[in-house]
Length: 335
Ligand code: VTB
Image 1 (cartoon, rainbow, N blue to C red):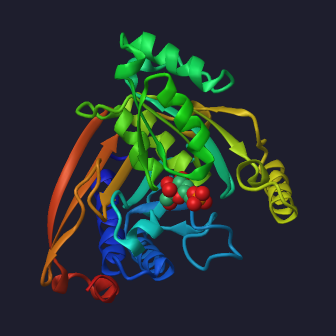
Image 2 (cartoon, rainbow, N blue to C red):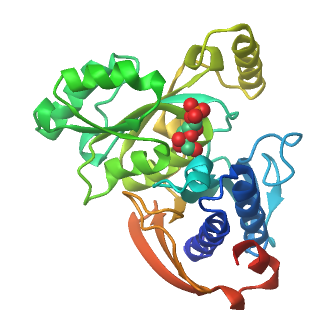
């Protein structure tokens, strides 16, 4: 993948974030997502790639845009793309922190193709690479990570999502003395924080979305961290009732069709199969990883994290956008 593509991908997440921001705090997560998808698609189609969406907004019959298998781009290098136009539609609709527009790109075959279902994830930064094993209890993992980092358990920091399904695990970690930062939503930002040189976060553990997991794996690989994961059918995460068992069975079947299995350990290298990946993420609302968008009239500022795995460069790009001068194809979605 040509290095100049990184800049092109940062334009794509900037555009999606600006579109999401237009809907900030309006209580309509579908409208926010649609706008971000539309802009992301338009901008990807202006990019010199022969791209295929491998992680997207659902299957072809569920979503009209950026579906898995959709071809994007003007033509050029063949790249696979994993997108989450708004990582945190609820956060955007409710004006909460840490919403991002994200994308990961790599050469063909770079990413695990997985359905939109739940995934258990354990993520660490470069200093703890190689010492995680999701087949072992979380407590053992935290002890091993602390040892690798030369830390005591009471100085270890774990991020997770503040979901009822994590109540037990949060209490368990806290009883070990570990500090837990529970974000309401958004495990991509929570995962990336483990690898940022200026962050105090050591570990991310949660059960969240599989698409978010694959996008995170790309960023974590690019940053030299480590990640283990496991796909979980719905009835094992949510209530074990008839509806969820039926949905869970559909997910198990879908995985089989795609040649993967649920409840099986996935390593970072199974999800992001090459170092030559690019990750771009733009803040929509302010967060721990990125500044959010600020806007005064038709002038908006964005902050984007742009990571190239090949030589491990981490760029933070602050942009000022004169919204009324943007291309007509996206203007209506961002003003
Ligand atoms: C997960 C997580 C995301 O939404 O998908 C979560 O990976 C949804 O969890 O980062 P629930 O279905 O239990 O609400 C996010 O937090 C935000 O998109």
